[in-house]
Amino acid sequence: MIEPAESFWLDGSLVPSTTGTHLLTHTLHTGFGVFEGIRCYRLDDGSVRMFRGRDHMRRLLESGAALGLEVPYDLEQLVAGGAEAVRVNKLTDAYLRPLVYSGEPNVIFAHWLNTTHVAMLAFGWTGYSDRDRSAGTTATISPYPRPAALASFYKAKACGHYVLSVAAYGDARRRGYGQAIFCDENGLVAESTGENVFAVIGDIVCTPPPARPILMGITRDTVLTIARDDLGLEAAERDLTIDDLYEADEVFTTGTASELLHVPEIDGHKIGTGTLGPVTSAIQERFTALSRGRTPDTRGWLDIEIQGGEGI
Ligand code: PMP
Image (cartoon, rainbow, N blue to C red; front, side):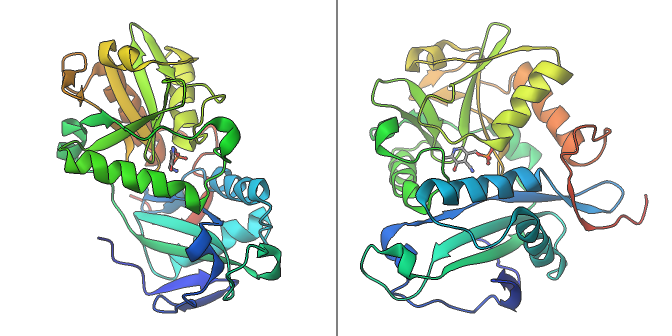
């Protein structure tokens, strides 16, 4: 459970977190809405910054466009609203959830009759402890496949997509696993319920290509960049079978909330040594250094300042 901050940003104003919306609001019934998940980090100099904030807000706009749900704010307005929601609540390490929903009581499908609302909801979030990170998460292959690429707006972070994620996650947990991995209709690996999937095979860091039904994760891109440019590893966007995962030296997932999380076991198959592997660990270490400002931010990933630093 999370503790929501005292206020959130709604359509340009700050409102108390208890502000509600009508139960007949369109998105609640249809899943026709889009959202994002963004991390804010407290850097070692005391400042607070969003990590790749513009990339996330850009994806929010693209998700809306994919559905034909026009977001009534531009990129900089979204960035400013998100930063304000974190700043006024005096949050430091935080998670920001921008949500675009199609409001007004409405039970028909004519979403253009509704007003599109944008909320920026924040809460404190420090992420996984070192202990949880080194334990990783076991996984199972989801009995429910990701729908065919043609049947879904899978590049959009749409609310309705997550029905399948929640069902698959519940099924995995009931069967004693920590996470579920989806395959597509051809049996090729897609992604987990809310993360992208990577396999280290020999010296190559592999992840399914954009043609598979996956969200183009921003952490996925961060990891591919770090692997290639900072660590000099070979990285490949290539198809992976379930056997590729079973036989890989390391498997890990990537996402904004969890960063990198290694998968020591899938459906009872031990992956590699069954412990946190050297490649996963090296990429995570570099990710931590970049996101906490311990190494020069040459790519401008800590792009949105929430609060200035007081020095260390
Ligand atoms: N796949 C799905 C289905 C997701 O919900 C997420 C989380 N946004 C990801 C992958 C990872 O994306 P990101 O690294 O941008 O958080």
